[in-house]
Length: 180
Image (tube, rainbow, N blue to C red; front, side, top):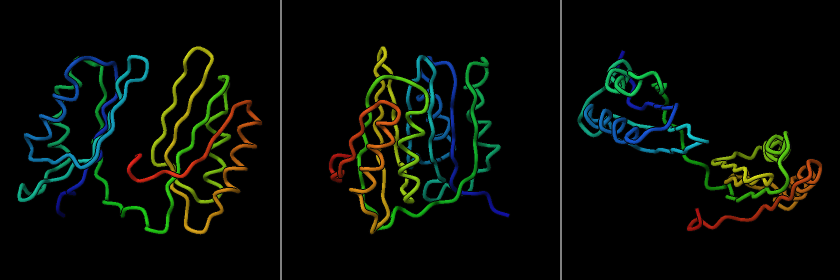
């Protein structure tokens, strides 16, 4: 059985300088190419996910080799690293439409659940989501795709009602490709 060519690598833990440099150097040393990535800090905690693949003619790379290359990151016990083989997923269909959802208001439990439930109810897919808390003000920004034929006005109305139910305000607007 051949080794998979695409891996999801997650690195989570206490932030410190050099994490990205160390992780990407270990992957590059194996000949892996970074195809997609995201990284953020959450109140001093580092979170990163990378999709990487065997580049060009570098040949297959085993998950154990990837884990070994990243083992220096976990040596001090402040970071956890996970390596998981994944299959390549097709890009969104041309029939989907892209939207940006913003939500803001007083912080309380259940805001995210209430508004994203309306997106899921019509088969929509959230492709990026960021939340921030500034004092008592809660802000959510999400990028999402709605299936072709879905009435976006009706989805926006449902999101507005859900947002009102948890005491926040929501806005759903079409996303232009160059805005994302």
